[in-house]
Image 1: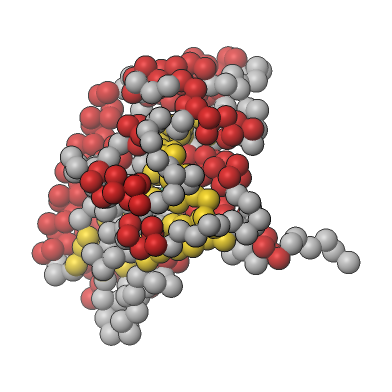
Image 2: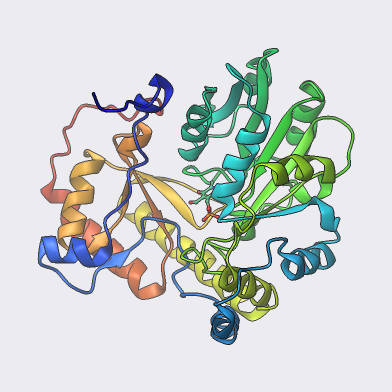
Length: 378
Ligand SMILES: Cc1ncc(COP(=O)(O)O)c(C=O)c1O
């Protein structure tokens, strides 16, 4: 008899990995495709980060600095946060996992918005916990009141995504503060700020401001994957009370972030010019795309992230296929239970124009009479 994983593992549907672009191009017999599906930086990596990687390569025979000393020191100085309250991760993804691993108990519950980042519920299930999804409000905002109502004595962690993925909506500081005072102080509140660098709403909270405050412990998660263009390196960080960091330190791998990733992130923090250019590209890209989508008579949802949702008159998986055949890779929202929505990130100008051109060609060819299953629930 073959070994079998326990039921809470065997019942998991694995995270659907996308195929490499080169493989998709080979399968579909196309070349020169563009990808607007994964909220990546369309300008490439920060040039200063690339230089730092080149300089650090000669030391690859050594293990990385397991404490991430220089990167944490730089973050502490730049953002005036305590050095001991900064944890590095193999992408902010790893910090999501470490938080749940450190604080989960058998049968423990973790509350999250739905739809939101798919990884939260997956990680909770890995650890034998129970994900408690709370649907968004009809305006697609996170329903903080319903999330507070979902708290039980078994609740350990609450995930909030600000701006949210896939909707791009933000929580305001007033609402966040009211939420914090309405939930028990022994909870961990994760403010996942993967897209905060693109936010233009001045009324949003910064997770950095909640270290050492009264009430529930706020852990802010940030990443170098998006605004700094380092998704392939896998490096992110969390800021939190130092005692919370102490727990996460107990459950992490000793060398969880590589030396090239640390060196690149350190250099990227000084690359103000790249950050400025990235934001400008994303913001002007979004404005252009909103305008063109509106001209096509489609509904879109304005976003504070580098991506946004578009409601379409056909099934998203069909549109995904048709666009892919023409070399434009977008994200179908079907796996989020949103069968008539797609999500795209803003690209550089030529990519945005190609997306619009291709969409206007493809949409009329697709069946617009598919049943309306545009519900935001699975
Ligand atoms: C909401 C959210 N959080 C975290 C991440 C993970 O980022 P990282 O690349 O730092 O692991 C993503 C990536 O897409 C995301 O959308």
